[in-house]
Length: 53
Length: 238
Picture (tube, each protein chain N blue to C red):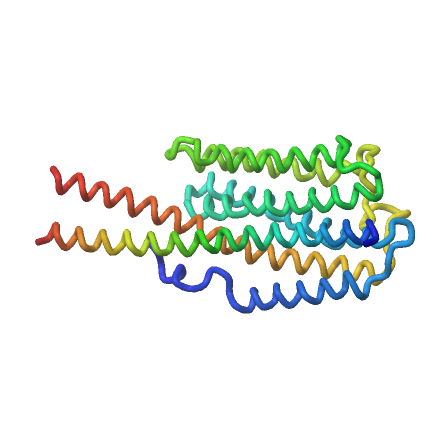
């Protein structure tokens, strides 16, 4: 492969991989945080019920 | 607590579709349509991603800085969340900018890196924001947002230095081709692809920013709920 073409290919590949890799990572983090917050909210409601009882 | 807003997707569908579409068109324009630059050859096409990434990085720095100032004035945690999200994207797009610049430099200059004013100031900018991300979790919770806001305003102040460095000093880095004076300029089709590259990367940056801001809000909600849960536990045990 032409060395210039190789640098062009790897430049775009690394750039897109970094951005999409980061986007994938924060999307996964969002999913797990959403689940955690939902569980915490349920646990809080349960405790409030127990406290009232 | 989560609001109704947080139940909706972080990125609207129209924005996601727009970013995907412009990205595909941009790839076509870069690899199939734009003419090859006569002096540097095909590797010059890295320009259409390298400069838009820097543009996104500078915009992110500005958004993060303005959000930090608004936080210091209004003490509203939503501005701190936006600032954190924008500052993290400064690092991501800054890395893309620097790595692409290195891949462009190697075949043209014969070296990956040199400590000229443009490259050094760009590295310093990246370093300030990387320090921000490292220091943030280490800062005391009650002063975290304030300390981080000050650091981020310092980072924003470095952006004009990076932008002006190849105008003020003699650098290995090329002089600006857009708005760089009487001897600057490009072939008209190159301008089209460059402008399209900016739109593409900015749309992508916007998507990333919205998802990261949502994560920041969820982290805050999670910490808040955990604290309240412990308080409730303490009341019960008392």
